[in-house]
Image (cartoon, rainbow, N blue to C red; front, top):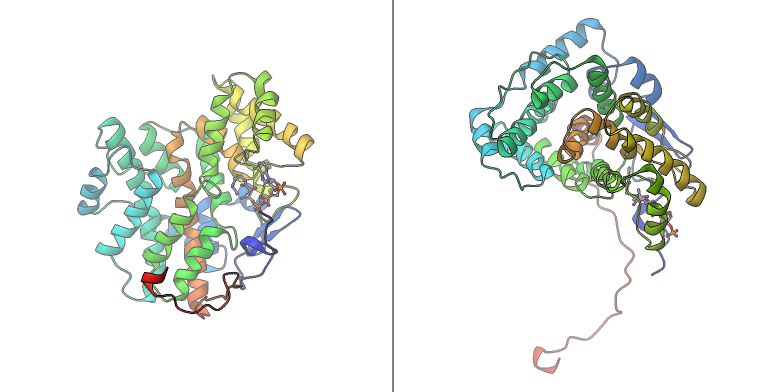
Length: 371
Ligand SMILES: CC(C)(COP(=O)(O)OP(=O)(O)OC[C@H]1O[C@@H](n2cnc3c(N)ncnc32)[C@H](O)[C@@H]1OP(=O)(O)O)[C@@H](O)C(=O)NCCC(=O)NCCS
């Protein structure tokens, strides 16, 4: 079927934002700062502060913000019980959705004045809870929830690996969280904004957004890219592997983008980290295959990797199980979703577009016995 003009609202403006700009030719800025500058100079916590409060923090602001986040990481006892009751077979995004939703039950947002506190609490607690669930359901271990680590990235890795984490690993995940934190009117953010426009609570907005992020055409792509790269046994197979996929008209996960048309600026940044981490790693071929795939798809189809693609080898090298790839995207995006919900609330009109009707013309009623 031929695609309708404007299908998927592609290229149409659906509102205004002052949070980020995504330019077709491959540029991304958060409140005016380029993603390249943020990734190399700022910590994820600084970026989160910028998105939530509109300006970069000074040293005091940042230290205070980091301290608050650290104090908000521990799960309430009843959440521990909920998390322990979720089976290992659950999709991890269902776990994230449940954690956020349950937090809305036990620590509801009483008024919009609470919105920033809710975001900080969810960022802290979700990070702990998803790793706690993974370790408990997959390994039968009840981990200690505290790590003493200042950053979200280091806290996540230390909880997961139960060992000291080296600086390159901490920095890689920290940069990754910055890259995933915000991306204008993508599907999950738009979902969250629609929910916010009804003046619903923040937990509902974020739960709705998680549902959209779960799909393989959105956040699920990093996980799918990993599965694909793992299917390739040697770098010599990459081209035949891709040829087969293209012949079967299959989408290559982690490639293409709804807005960028030449490159996704986030891809080169995470690719550098994947490259560095691959050196000397027993699964070096994952990164090497990814590099060949990138060049081959460019040459054959003019396709380029989006941010999810090189995240797959990079996360693998950090020792993160594939199941936890998309939840990490969600944890980072709690910041962007929240910032958009605040923005929507700050200048709200309920989002209610119209549709072009393409069904049958007017018809006369047919009694049930006559059909
Ligand atoms: C991201 C994505 C959903 C954008 O979709 P979109 O804006 O509708 O782009 P289109 O699907 O119209 O792409 C245009 C053409 O490129 C092709 N294309 C786009 N992405 C492709 C991919 N990953 N693999 C193979 N072909 C692809 C499409 O088939 C289409 O070809 P056609 O005109 O012959 O039908 C799409 O590129 C995709 O499904 N990518 C894989 C999933 C993914 O990585 N998602 C994460 C996004 S950050």
